[in-house]
Amino acid sequence: MSGQNQQHYQKISNIYDDLWSYSEEYIKFMTTKIIEYLRLKPTDTLVDLGCGTGIYAKSILKQIQLDNSIICVDPSEKMLQQIPDSPQYKIMALDAIDFLFQAEEVYNKVLIKEVIHHIDNKELLFSRLFQLLTSDGIFLLILLPPTIDYPLFDEALHRYEKNQPHYSNVANLLEKVGFKVSVNLVEYLQAIPKSQYFHMVENRYMSLLSLFDDKQLAEGLAEMSQKYAQQSVLEFPDRFVFITASKL
Image 1 (cartoon, rainbow, N blue to C red):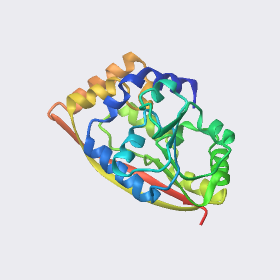
Image 2: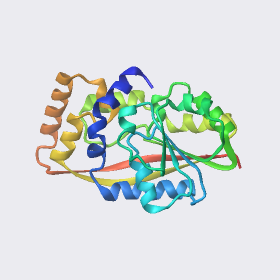
Image 3: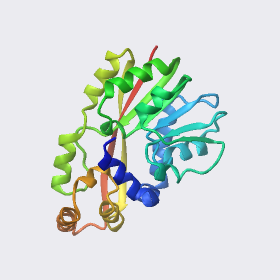
Image 4: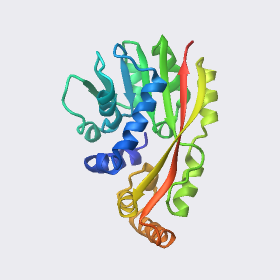
């Protein structure tokens, strides 16, 4: 992860959960899908790589009780401080690749959600994951599609499309290192009060928005105000690509 992105997450760590947990139903929906695609069982050992504040690790434990601690890995210590001090979590302040090369044990379930665009050497990451994953293990990688319908200003959408890795390239790279791969699309219809969503954008809830300085962001918000002047609630499809990788 670049220094700029690390600074971004350090800066918003104290408000990150507030920015993202705008809908308990959304978090519950995504968690249910994660459990389904990981085929998560109580006896599994789960690694959440790039866990942030542990939003999904915490939500998973509301739906399924695991015998082993969830291993929560993130380079931002401030983000990790939002995770409860509990035996249910093993917290490690490390970059994903550093963590994998320091690991001395194998894991059977690994989650990476909306982090892969921050990792430059994806092939190295995937190769090491293939080595560490048990023969019956599952690696679930979740990312956004090449285009999104978020109610953002035009330049933000343009930069997103320019920088977002294409899921087909990611899937091909996983197959190259030895994984058997399946790709599925998951969609959730968001409905967020406009004032709340504008607050999220103002606080740069997506790392994408850290690319814009205060003046550019203010101009973007002004553009959004004009575009959505007649709406009090912003509805849009939130689409995700679920890439499931296994050795079998």
